[in-house]
Amino acid sequence: MTSAGAERTDLKGMTLPELEEFLARWGKERYRARQLFRWVYQKHAADFAAMTDLSKELRGILAGSCRVSGFSAERVETSADGTEKYLFRLEDGEAVESVLIPDEGRRTLCISSQVGCPLQCGFCATGASGFRRNMTSAEIVQQACFAEERLAGRGERLSNVVFMGMGEPLLNVPEVSRTIGILLSQFAFGISGKRVTVSTAGIVPEMLALARAYPVSFAVSINAARDDLRSRLMPINRKYPLKEVVAAMRRIPLQTGRKVTAEYVLLAGVNDSLEDALALSRLFRGARIKVNLIPYNTHEASPHRAPEADAVDRFRNVLLAGGIQTITRERRGADIRAACGQLRTAPTRASRCRGTPAEGITGGTAGGSGGVAAGGGAE
Image (cartoon, rainbow, N blue to C red):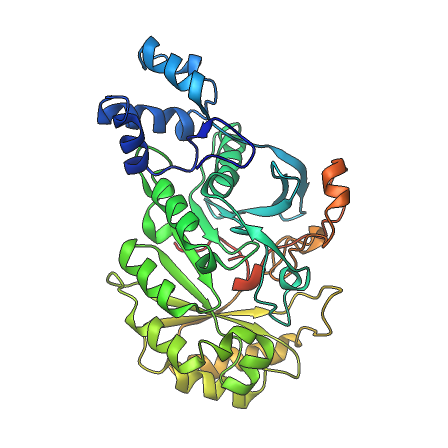
């Protein structure tokens, strides 16, 4: 967890067990790691001298060999509906975005886990802009730290986190797992597992492994009820076809009353027919799966368009008649390109390295995984 080009060990992004092990090398007690965790994630301190309940000796050791990384938003955009979009510049000059969604007492942050996305889903702006690299756990969790500090100034708290920003979280499992451990820790954010949602295009082995490791919620991008169409929209389907993905969704261990979410982006004339709805209903029959319908949000890199409202209603009604719990996702942040499927960074790096504010960022949320949960993810 030492950043490229940095000699000091970055303590941000370590899980509590990793930090305990790290401090044990200096003969320090386990509770010191808990103290450090609180300073970093609850008090958002980066200066070891300010961590006054640590011994002077330990503070000196940490100051001499460690650091607590961080970054602020280079740009903040606020939608008419209260949604906020943040542009973050990373230490190597790359850029990512995240989105904060206020809704009925919840404050949900949609975070990115990769710079760009390698999956190239045909309807998503993030994939169209290419893939740069995986993000580190320090970079991923800093998005939550920034939002939490910003909310604290309003007397609010971050209640939900959804891995629905740029990238496919399950192609960056080690760093995403570390981040989840931090989000769930009572000594850090203390967010309940059901309020942390991992959205995936259906990376089957990693999905099941993560489900066994953490009691988080899952949202899986489906977007078609037959393999030929899904493969055209989502090339990853050639590796993990529908039958395998849905079988994995059925196998995810769930607490009583909880369901796996199937995300379905509705594309006019492509996957929004009554036949598509009937096929989807058959696909999920008897499973603990709920469907999140997402009328498409257009962007310049895609030829697709959204269906009319009555077509969305007809599709939803077929699913409801088949006994499938179905909701239509509310569109949030569209005026600042923070709606599902619109998050995108420029393919070139030159302007980013010059530090020009937000140059090359065209906005929005979805990544390769299917997009922001408008209204806040899991309850």
